[in-house]
Amino acid sequence: MTSRPLLLHVGSSKTGTSALQLALWNSTDALAASGVGIPLVGRGATVQRLLRPLGWVAASGFVEDIDTGGLDRLTTQLRDTPGDRLMISNEDLVEAPTEQIAALKRVAEAADLDVRVIVTARDWARQLPSEWQQLLKDRVTTDYESFIAQVRAREGANGETFWRRQDFVGVCDRWGAGLDPADVHLVPVPAKSVDRDAVFRVFSELAGFDPSTLTIDSRNINQSFGYTEAEMLRRLNLALGDRLPDFEKQYMPAFRRVLVQHVITRGRAPRITLPPAHVQWVHEVTRDLLATALDRGYTVHGDHDLLSPDPSAVGPLPTIDEAEMAAATLKTLADFAVAVFEEKQRAKARREAKVAGTTRGRPTADEAARRTRDRARQLIRRWRS
Image 1 (cartoon, rainbow, N blue to C red):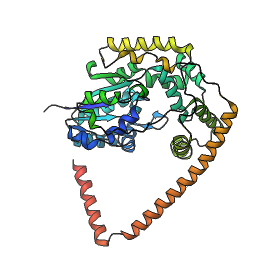
Image 2 (image 1 turned 90 degrees about the horizontal axis):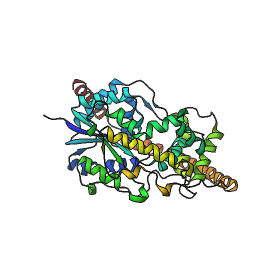
Image 3 (image 1 turned 30 degrees about the vertical axis):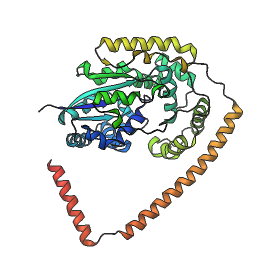
Image 4 (image 1 turned 45 degrees about the horizontal axis):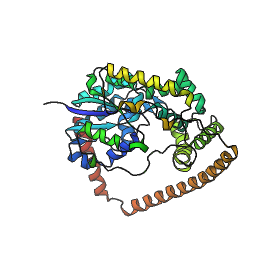
């Protein structure tokens, strides 16, 4: 009996990963009919069953100890997922250290799966603005031009984070350790404005299914900020200071989930570009990275020129109009207040509906006892397996 392939898409971040994952999760039945199993459906399941056991914490990365019990449960889930080949996509894996990578490969081996790594990459003229915006969502307060300087010098936490996420050779090296280089696939992807379906076509080719199988969301998933919008978020992070220090329990529910994800307007302000002074450096760096990837035998797909700086992404940064910034900030804070109130009203309605449903559907004593016995039997069978 031969091992089933596990197509493991580990990023890079900001390469159309959100749209791809949503398409996979929306198409599980159709993919299953094509022989492709998706063992982790939804962001929540991916975090709880894959990232948490590997020691991942939001905005901090892989900083906790590995949970071997959680990985054992993941092994069982992978083994039990039907399909001729399985696929997992998660861009947070791009930052995984060697210890976590080795642990996940052991999980795949225990589940009788043959790992094949997929790394998506995009030209740095677009990735530098995208990563800066992403870091702002993680409450970073560095301005854009200082961020670029840190990346160029490979200095500080921001520079280190960018290289760990976007140095596609480094990612291939870490995840390809112990694998046949041909089983490490580097996929240059164009901007969505150029070809929004490219990433879906490539993955359908790699996994062996018809791209029409996917149910693709027509919305602009994870749309970028404009320069004024991003700078406003940076200043709000500065004003927040050291308050709400716990990112997951305080900053995310109080700040990011409502203000960042649903209130700040996107797409109205001039977009963030790569200043012309950095174009030559970006061209040289990505040219050298591509040459190294080819020299090491990694399978590079498609048009290699997609990794060169796109001229349409290059240009002087817009000038910030402070009056416009003040007006945008006031509007955002007013919208934020309304959104917080509305969210509290929705949460109240959900609690009331749950209480009403529980009261109407409360089980009898016999039903409750039966459910307890069934649950106990399930736990015993799982423990024995």
